[in-house]
Length: 257
Image 1 (cartoon, rainbow, N blue to C red):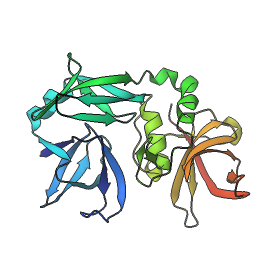
Image 2 (image 1 turned 30 degrees about the vertical axis):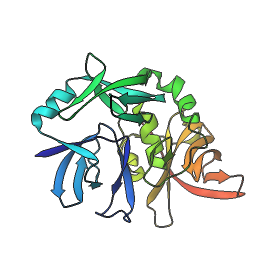
Image 3 (image 1 turned 90 degrees about the vertical axis):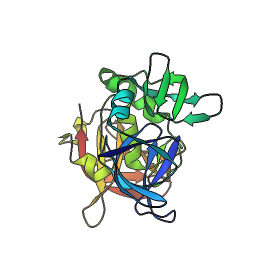
Image 4 (image 1 turned 90 degrees about the horizontal axis):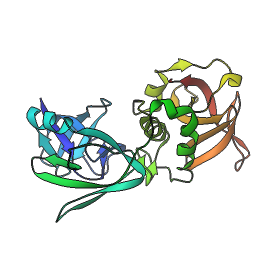
């Protein structure tokens, strides 16, 4: 197998090998992937952590062999904190977004065969046992972040990217898309049983799950729709007070702890 690692802060993952193609997700600095197909300007990849597929532009990553991979992964894993962080050396500087995963050496560096950078910035402080007490505050810190199809950061995020990112800060790995996330977890049978951090999923007229949000309490949800926003929710779905109508139809509620 051939591998690669993203060497820029945040790059598009395209459905097809063209800039005009749909951005299905984004690849963050340090994310590892399997190389499936190499073309003149684009490379088809499979992200190792989520199995997500897409095309990344050549020049936005560095190739890794098995030894490179083992050496990098032998470092201490950390997540960049909410305030962000910086990787730098004498000639390069990368502003990292919250939730970026790095494997740091004892000298606080990331070491690639062609690149060595020192990390400066905060670290994600949360663990899984802090989920119930801290998840709402972390999610609320994203309020008014603009919606971006395929986005995964504070600079633009979509609904499933939002839930995936927030959960990752508590050591809980979710797949990339809402319908995939809905296939995991345990069903919450009744609205009255909702707990903070539960995920609510919504479907379209064809019954396909297309939206997800994080419950703040039994009838309040935070989700990415035009922006990260807070709305009321009941057994019918999300009620958007600005539009004075229901914007999303409830399908199911899931719990992951």
